[in-house]
Image 1 (tube, rainbow, N blue to C red):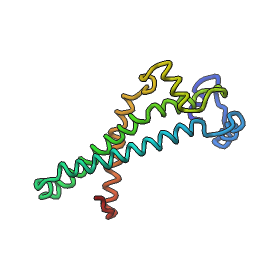
Image 2: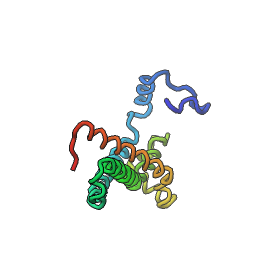
Image 3: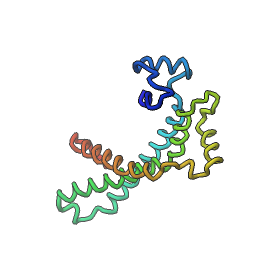
Image 4: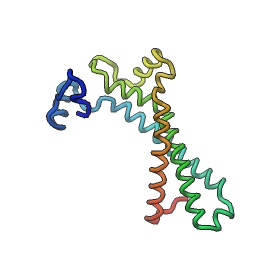
Length: 171
C-alpha cells in the first residue's frame, strides 16, 4: 500500500489494509514473500549483534576501568554512556556487515513480480553474485553502516539507561 499510486500502471489497487491482504493472498498465494530471508537475516544478525555487543562491552569495561574513573560518579556515567555508544554502534555495524547480502536477497524476492522466480534467498544471492560479484551482494553498504552506528548506539544507550533506572544489574 505504501507505493500504490506512485506510478500510473498500479495506481490505487487497494482500498484498505484488509483489501490489500486478501488480494495479495489471492494473487501471490501468501503475504510473507521474503519471510525466509528475513528470518535468516534476523537470526544470524542478532547472533552477531549480541556476541559483538557483549564482547565489546566486556572488553571496554575491563580496559577502561581505572581509579580515575571510579573516583568520580559523573565520570562513571560518562564512561557507561561512551561504552554504550561504542559497543552499540559497532554491534549494529557488525549486524549489517554480516547480513546485508541476505537483505539484498530479501529485497529482490519481495520486489520480483515473476511468480516463477526463486524465493530461496541463497539461490537469489548466487544469481546476484554471478551477475555483479561481491559488490552486488553488498549494494548499499555505505549508507547502511552510516545509519547503523548512530541508530544502534542510541538504542543500546537507552536500553542500558532504562535498565539502570529500573534497578536491573548488568555485570
